[in-house]
Image (cartoon, rainbow, N blue to C red; front, side):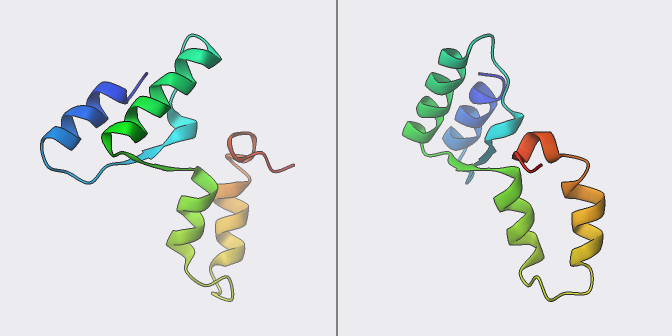
Length: 83
């Protein structure tokens, strides 16, 4: 529920809201799941860190892709599930 209320207020304010789901923290897994479902129900578009950064990259042939992997993915590996 950590950003549910903020996201819901932004939706009501007319904003397009993308929710970085791994950034949401809750007291229980059930609370997390219900909060995410509530946001989706209200129109929040769920995204993951991996998909977000990949969208930013656009093209993995880009010379900066190795820097992205080394500096971003390696730092947040536990959040995106890479090993």
